[in-house]
Image 1 (cartoon, helix red, strand yellow):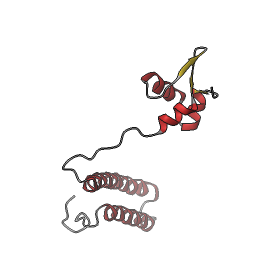
Image 2: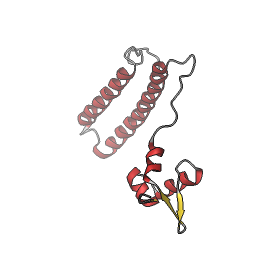
Image 3: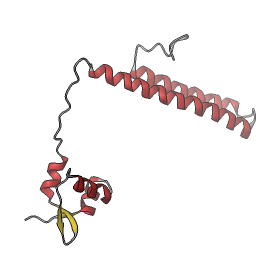
Image 4: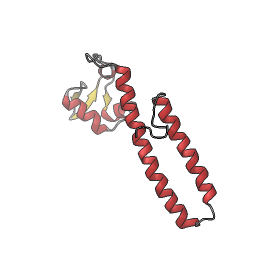
Length: 137
């Protein structure tokens, strides 16, 4: 029988906590053995655990590319909303710290940040009307 791994060794190899490894064993996802009251894992069982056993099945009527794009667009909009909130906070904070003396530096930062947001939107949806005047938000 090969040397069995402790939950700490398995956790270290996978970059997770010992608690996660123990939970997987108790739930039956990872095969483990009790030796002197401690959980141990056979390296072959760990290898089998790491092999995907379920192949995603396509959902009828759902185009995976459109599904991904739609959710990616939602993510980019969420990032843009955070950007807008951060922009407002940065302007207020810079105004409180520097007054109007450093306004040009703040404008440069905001312009670069907006360009990054626009690039993200174009990357996800090249046909987006969000960037055009009067486009959807």
